[in-house]
Structures are given as C-alpha cells and as structure tokens.
Length: 340
Picture 1 (cartoon, rainbow, N blue to C red):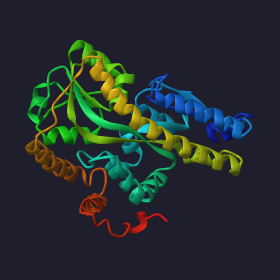
Picture 2: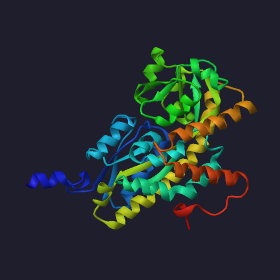
Picture 3: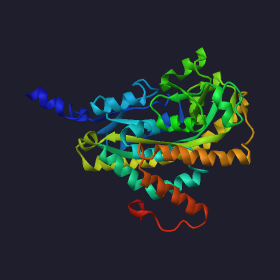
Picture 4: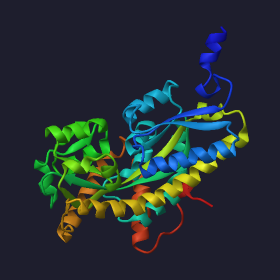
C-alpha cells in the first residue's frame, strides 16, 4: 500500500529533497533558447535555496513534442518547452497564434497577445497545465533546394510538413501543395536522402538544427509567426510544497521567457542575414498580386481550421480585432480577454 501511495504522488514529491522538474525541449544545447533556460534554472535554484530546480533534456532527446506530451501525461516528465505543434495537442485554441498569413508584423502579434492571452491561458488551464510563460520562435520562412519565387513553385519542391501539424497541412493545401510528413527529428535525414527538398521554420531554428547545410534558397514571404510556450503539469506544479516557491517559479519563467522573445526577434533577423552569408539565396519580395493571393489563401486556410482547432468565434474575434487595428480604430478590448 505504501508503494501504491508513493507512485500516486507527482514525481517531484516521490523523494526527499528538492522538487525536480523534468523538462524537455527540442532546442539544441548551445542555442539561445538553452542559454536562457540554463540562466532561468540557475536563478530559480538561487531564489528557492535549492528547493526547486529543473532537470533539462535538450535537443529532442525525449522525442518529438508528441512524445513529450505523452510523457507528461504519465508523469515521466513534468514540463516542456513547446512550439505550436505541442501546444495544439494540449490546448488547440492556442493555435490561433500560428494561423497562416494572419499577422503582418511583431506589433500585431503583441497586440493579439494583449487582447487574448486570458482566453488562451484558460484553455491551457482546462487541459490540466500551468502556463509558465509565452515565448516566440520567430517568423516562419520556406527554405528549399530549388528556387521558390511564388506559391506555384512549392508544388514541385517536395515540401516537408511536421507530422501532426494541421496548421501547416492546411496552409499547403490552400496553395495546392501535397507535403511529405515527417517527425521533426527525421528532417535532416529526409534532406540528405532527397525524400524532402524543402522545409519551413524560423531562421534561428533552421540554423540551430543545421538544416541550412542541405538547402539553397529562402522564400521571402513568411507563412506565419511561430508561437511557443513553457507548460507544466498542473498536478506537478501544485505538488511543489511551498506557495512562495510556486510564485517564484511563475515569476522567473514569465520574466525570462519575455526576454527570450526579445532575443529571438533580434537573433532571427541576424540569422536570416547570416544564412545569406552562408550562400543561401533570398528570393525577391512577393509581388502585389501574390500578396493579395496570400490574403485570400490565409482567410481560406484559417476558416477551414476553425472548428477543428480553434473555435469560429475566436477566429472571428481575432480577425476583427486586427482589422480594426489596421483601420486605426482598435476600439474596446475584447470581452473576457481584456486586461487591466
């Protein structure tokens, strides 16, 4: 009976000593993401006198985000750093942040976070997780072995899609592309064997994962802004004995992850320039006709995802908020999403 009771406890409480939060991420060691996470962990240990700390598993050693979600659910891990793919498995409404061709710039991304974070955090809470902080991976570009100068060029590029990513699937479907699904950990081998000839991702990620070494061209039309977040099992969070330690964990994560977003934005710009310095060719800016086409494709793709990921009501509210802002009349903050 004692063994049964011990096994029923969240992992951080099974043994005497500090609460150890087993945390997995796809971010490779040495990347900006990992540097910020290491700094976060050092400060967390100092601020809690060693009572709470992370044990970090970088570089996908715990598997793809699908694997990480499964391991959190069974208690093998307690937290993870997720892209939109992992977030969508936990709280599908959050994928509105990755919706194709929705945002035009960083200011619009920040505006929607300000208006709708409360709604999205509520979805995360209902799923049994605690949001420790939002972050951002950056604007998602198409990288390829053959030139891509228009939507039509992607049809023959053997484009990769992250297995289990409905956002990218529908974005490709909107432009008539049939992508090739692979786990993110299999992308490099897919590029090496010729199974795929094109990928998508923020410049910093494509650099950190070394995919750029097998690619030649960059299409200068971002598909979306890639959202991310650090989530922790609510059961594991509440199992941390001291309330002040839980508060410190949330405070530090929010602060460090805001800093990570700031760094990611700056370093993605540098990475895009550095990739061109490595010999990758950036396409010309899309024509006015192509931009209008992407607006139509975006509306169609986002509409097809409504009801499957995020709700139609949320999509309408987000698009209406952006339209009002673009017209110079942002109006009142939206419903329960309003802050302050």
